[in-house]
Image 1: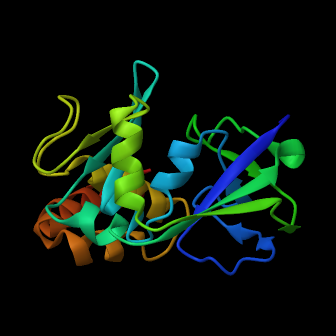
Image 2: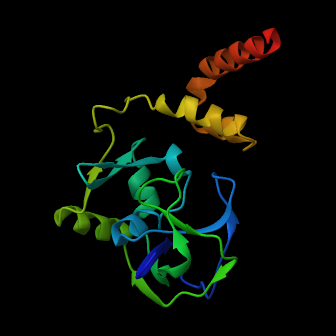
Length: 193
């Protein structure tokens, strides 16, 4: 990818970004060509168990899944790293706003400090670069009970990302019966084959 890409982090001491295995089961370094997306990734928590990112009509959406999550994730400082985009590519199985590099290490070109990530995201919202949905507000295509996570995390587990279901149920214990039912049905179906 030509030009600059961005990596957001709560860590301001990164001299070199190193590759880590992702949910896509590739050892890679993540980035994006949009600053607002990198800002949204500065908050470290439970990933899509806390928030959901989406794009609607070309605009990024950040959706708070549980009350207070946005303050917990973003009411703190963060750092925006600029990287040379040359080794970054978009892959078919990635979210449309992400690019990855299969390089093992990349040295940032520049770093920008944000004293409060939430304030920066709210400023981006005022500019029209992102829509922030605070719980319980959300788009019509997203269930209020977050049940859209059930199939996603069962799929992660089935693809070999062990512990995915445990992590889901540690945050959403109310899904336990449904997850167990789906897993039992799939086991029975596999035994009949």
